[in-house]
Amino acid sequence: MKMRVFRFLGAETRGMHQAAYVLAAFSLASQLLGLVRDRLLASFFGAGHTLDIYYAAFRVPDFLFATVASLFSLYALLPILSRFESEQHSLMTRFLRDILGVFFCGMAVIGAIAFFLAPVLAPILAPGFSDPVSQAQLVLLMRILLLQPIFLGASNTIAALTQLRHRFVLYSVSPLLYNLGIITGAVLFYPIFGIAGLGWGVVLGALAHMGVQLPYFISEKPQVTLSTARLFSGIKEVLTLSVPRTLALASTQISLVVLVALASLLAPGSIAVFTFAFNLQSVPLTIIGVSYSVAAFPTLARLHAQGAREEFMRYVEAALRHVIFWAIPGTVFTIVLRAQIVRVILGAGQFNWDATRLTAAALALFILSLCAQSLTLLIARAYYATGNTRKPFYFGCADIAVSIISAFALLELFRSDVFFRSFIESLLRVEDVHGTEILMIALGYALGSTAEFIIGFAYFMRDFALSLAQIARLSFESFAAAIIGAATSYGVLFSVGSNAQINTTVNLMLQTTLAGIVGLTISCGILYLLKNREFLEALAALQRRFADAPQVAVEPSDVS
Image (cartoon, rainbow, N blue to C red; front, side, top):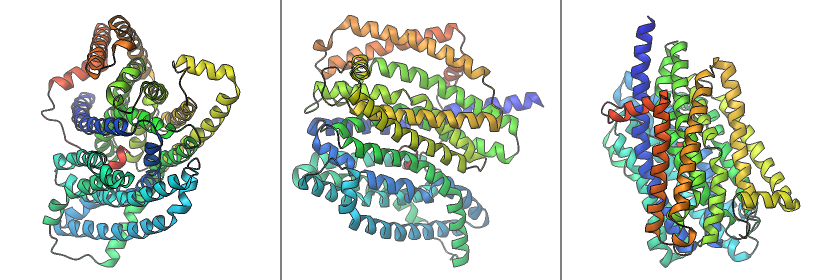
């Protein structure tokens, strides 16, 4: 029996690693295009007032997407749609069409309310924008961007059918089109319409995100009708499953609303620096944390449904180990190469060297919580797989409280204590840069994410009797290899040239690539000599070239 269990887990975990790597590849493509988007915005506008307004205007639409538009999410819809499909194919399609109609009606009403309340919300969301021109621009952009959660939410609902029909490539193209729309807004619309053009570019991207899937959705024409009682029964079931998860998703958006409002009171460009650094740390978070948590979720749900507790825990442990395996070196190497990363990606046009240094410092603080954020995503999926959607919400509440309280407390300490301020600025090498107060808001966010993980992990260990032996071994080996490899990378950076010699993008890319390759080679060599289990498993999964990998897709809320 045990041999069968181990063989089962071996095949399942290999499939999880391969699925995670396939998903990571799609995520990487989307994230790279997102970085191109950020580079264009940084080049055109720099870390200044225009981008502060642009990013502040996203807070209400993003909050609506995370709360209202995500109610009809893939995680809640797929189980119910699968049951409808088992009864009758057309019944499932009819239910999904009716759900889409309900969604559009609901979002239209909520969007209209937010549209009329925009002049009231603007001073609350960005109290630092007190002049009438800035307030007017913020209200205008916010109203335009209210179309975004409607289209992305509808795309999210339509994606349930795309997933069931295994049209994963079609869905994976959607995020690419979204970023292309934003790029179009910056390049083509802004010169014509001004700051409103940036908003219309976002709307175009959201419409394309939905539109690429819409023809396939329309082609399935149901031949049956669904009774009102059956429809409302299905909606009630969807909401029962999705509301706690939606509240957990909202925790990040609530934190961001408050932190961005606080940043608006600081030096011009603070919101832009905060957002650029946040977007950069989201790249490894998406590739590592989201990829593994989404890849593991279907099997975790199946194992729990079968009552296979031992196999469930082995599978969770395997996923946890590999998230830590990738997240620790991701954190260490990002901190060492942060200035080069920011300069290569954002350093063009109006984005000057001071903005680069400040964004790099904020990135270093954000990335401290990479491992915590990645593991939190996996822990949440494990709870969702067992049907417990409440606890991730409680963990998210801790994130909100710690993030906001920490940001205010750290900002006050930074302003009042000269020693603390000098220590932070010297540590991050931004002593002569204006606007360093924004670093305390980034640190507050990282502390909130870390607190959420610590509380969630403590409860997870209690609820599932998780063993720490393998995780402790891996953490030590991965951290030791990452530190030695990163130190080697730093030596390469020091030897090939100073900042004065890396003013061109090509030289920067060559320097960063060389330092990264040398450092990673050293780290991999150490892990190989240690016969690190996770390293060998990762090599085995990569060697299979994903030939038999089960394909999965990410919904927008997974990466927001």
